[in-house]
Image (tube, rainbow, N blue to C red; front, side, top):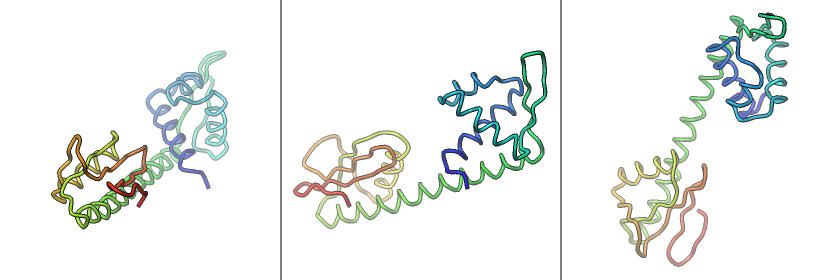
Length: 161
């Protein structure tokens, strides 16, 4: 069973190939920010499973063709990706709601938010929904976002909830 990273790479490969069947492995590697060997490995798997075919376009050029099975795989991978993103969204919102309940129980109606990106945006929206103000400084609890991880730091005891 492929990992989520492998699935994401295969989805990206299929999308790039669909847009440009004459794309090179080196170009794919650059676009995906991986080694050419990684692209080659994924392409070989897709070819072996019948999702992609190779056609020689010129003496040294190859053309990648996505089969109908490959199109179906791309659709399944896209649905899986979207489901995973919604699951992340729901879990993050639930965790932040729990943190904000702790903040409110401790007598605060504001927090500082440290971090940026999509997960920080989810935190902001949840704060708005829960009527918790976000302030730049002050003696308030802190929601810290690092990547996909959200940690609540309370004034006295800095702990991960």
